[in-house]
Structure formats: C-alpha cells, structure tokens
Image (cartoon, rainbow, N blue to C red):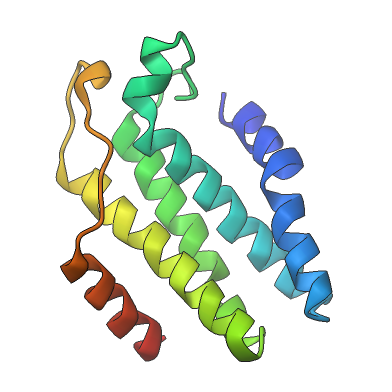
Length: 143
C-alpha cells in the first residue's frame, strides 16, 4: 500500500536529502520536510520509470488499488511541495538541486505522456534528449 511505499522512501531516499542539507547548513524543519518531499518524489519516479523491468523481475511497487496515473500525479504533488527548498540552498548546491527537481519533473512529463496501458511490462523507460536538457536549464533559471 502507499503507506508502506512511503515508509520505504522515508528510510531509503529521504536520509540522503537530509544529509545533503546538513552538509550545506540547512537544518530547519520546513527545509527538511521539503527535502523529504523531493526525495520521496524522486524515489517514486524511479520506481515508475523502471516499472516494466521491475515487473519482469517479480517486483511490483504500485500500491494495490491505485493506477500508475494516480501515482504519477502523487509524485508530482510531492515534488511541487518541495520546490521552495531550491531557494533556501545557496550557491552551486542550490542550482544542482534545481536541476535535480527539473529532471524529475521532466521524467514525470514523459511518463504521463505515454498514457495508461494494461500491460506495464511493455512500458519503455523514458530518456532525455538534448531538447529536454535545454528545457530543464530554462526552467531552472525561471525557478
């Protein structure tokens, strides 16, 4: 279920973001919560972009009773909750965080664009083109 999936993210992805924030002297509760939202979103995006491969290997992370479309929207909502953090992290690290967020959002765009299918084992992993990278840089500058 989603609670179990979020618990997995809380223990796997979120500590990485918190560690990075601590290295940059950002330790306030709001920033930590926003980091958790970004890291959880990134972990979920990773699950959804690798869905076909995971299913072929006997792993299924999609919460029972949920559609992939619902989970993609949920991941986007989490990412959006975390976006204000990019303005709290100073210097190059803040710009790197912007790029990570924009990369995650771009992958979500591509996952959402491919539409629903009943056979998720046939879903191709999205790839980013040069045009995608240009779009991401533009969006980083506008954040």
